[in-house]
Image 1 (cartoon, rainbow, N blue to C red):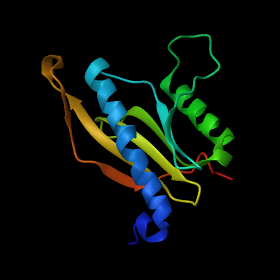
Image 2 (spheres, helix red, strand yellow):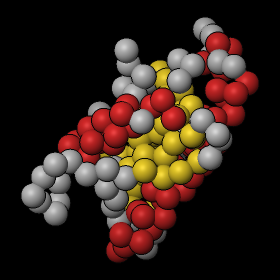
Image 3 (spheres, rainbow, N blue to C red):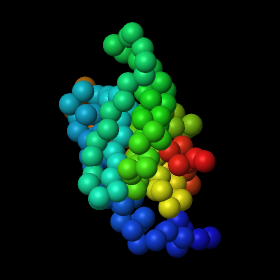
Image 4 (tube, rainbow, N blue to C red):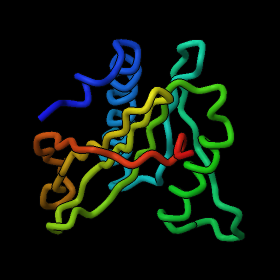
Length: 146
């Protein structure tokens, strides 16, 4: 079975690889400090700059649902996609098997889309976090969906 790397250009591979480390790193930092985090995004702009992007749903609440923040991130990215080469949306999720995970949905303007999950478990008595191996699979295009 072909890997996404077999079908992606060197530029697409580099862009998606460049997003994964800061996307996961910031999530891990937030989990260590706060035990949770709101969804957010990272992008590679057309000039190659990597930037963090936050979005909020149109809501009067200070604590919007994570699903609504994810939709707001995707909408913000789709509206600005002409200035982007790649995007990643990061969320704190529960996997179907019940484990918690950091999920990173990666997309590139050239076509590749994949989802990476980093399962984790909080140690007893709030003494850190144990991370399991990364899991990767095909993703869904939301930013460049049409």
